[in-house]
Image (spheres, rainbow, N blue to C red):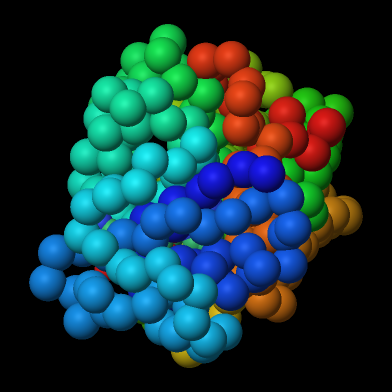
Amino acid sequence: MTNIAIVGAAGRMGLRLIALSRQHEELRVVAATERPGHSAIGQDAGEVAGIGRIGIAIFADLVDVPQVVIDFTAPAATRAMIKICREKGIAMVIGTTGLQQADHNLIDEAAADIAILQAPNMSMGVNLLFKVAAQMAKVLGDDYDIEITELHHRFKKDAPSGTAMGIAEAILKSTGKGRDALVQSRHGDDCPRKRGEIGMQSLRLGDEVGRHTVYFGALGERLEVTHTATTRDTFAHGALKAADWLAGRKPGRYTMADVLGL
Ligand code: NAD
């Protein structure tokens, strides 16, 4: 049995993590947190998530020490939680996106002391897409223009999505390119495509859960690979699986590819 805490328990992902944790018999929720002042503070996490009372109240702090924290919040909150987990020796699954290089450095430093897994997307399909897109880019070369598009719901804060950046990073790594090859949201009257660049576009529409397409276009043909998430539960199940996998691991930085055996 792995004891877990859900940080951001009343958020879109937090609610599903609480609700779906019941389907993972190997896991037990022992703590749930929300930002100070949130209306869910003091309420039962199960009742807030719509599954009935589970006997775990939502607090602003981590009152009970779990083996693993699952954090889908915002970069500032995640930074604070990394410090707490490191001090208390708690393993951590980070789903928060919009992280900057300084945040990744913080995760790398924490990995000296705790097992920590950060992934911009917890789904099997997307993690496979990271691999496949990297291979395709390497094989096809610069004769094929690469464009990445992502669609998400209107409430999403960061752009481009962490997943789109994950696809881009995987392609940069496999092709030996630097971040200067990325061109985001082209506009203007003199911005023709340069050979070898990777275009990225973000669309925000209604309640879209998440759709990513990588295009490879040459003169005469085009290849497109699309991943569509139809429910957030895909990410929640992935994160819960990752938490169980991470419990008891030695300190280090892990990825979903490790969990999924990709
Ligand atoms: P959301 O805004 O609905 O939920 C975030 C929750 O975190 C809110 O309830 C907020 O009050 C809470 N929070 C903020 N500061 C906090 C603090 N200090 N302590 C505790 N809770 C705090 O957002 P969401 O749609 O649930 O997404 C959360 C994050 O997860 C985003 O960065 C999103 O991009 C990312 N995400 C990642 C994946 C993935 O597979 N990795 C999937 C979906 C969403």
